[in-house]
Image 1: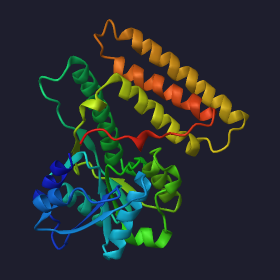
Image 2: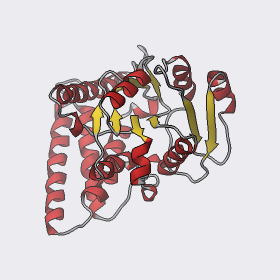
Image 3: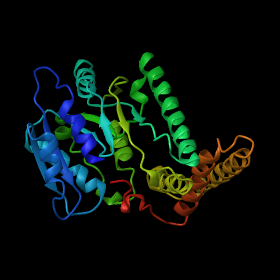
Length: 303
């Protein structure tokens, strides 16, 4: 997957009047991607480092350090299981510059699965594509109405102005470790610090789903872990009001998941992925009430 991303970097357009440094951080005790990086980005300036402290927030913060040490004006993030469109960086840079934004994001699409993929993988893939389409339509509507400042910005497709980072000192929360959600919290903290944010609808990246992620069990775990990782930030205090609200959410999501599970029979599995996500979400909220923490990113899917 990393090779596909780096190959897309190598052929993308560079905004006029700018230069690009590729900052690559391997969350490992040693470098294992030297050959791939040299093959794909041998003609480009690359800063390649390891972050032995395991956990996505530690790796993301090292990327911020590299960008600031290299005296860059902007920092971008994409995930290593994505590929960028040829005009991706131009679109991000144009929008954040002309609109004088501090933080901007763009859509993340889903690459097709092989035609010979098992039936259940194709069903789950269709569900994920529908999710992307709904999200993209909603955000495009907000952009058209001048309300894209309300769109949450995630690091799967993300650019920030380094002057804003230097002025505020905002970092990814390393206490979140393997739980995930560090980009969600970063966005919330940035907004509280006065960040001007927006959406670049044409700055598209696409993600390849590994076979491990196209299973019902993974969809359940994903719903569970996303629910659990957001619990601490959404309910920092477990008072009576918060507990009542969480219990209502658990009941609603459980009932919704069970109904969608039953509907999967007449719909030939159409609603099954959503059923698993909702039931996983309910379980995550319940475990959050009991004091558990997510370890979603302690294991890796794909290669």
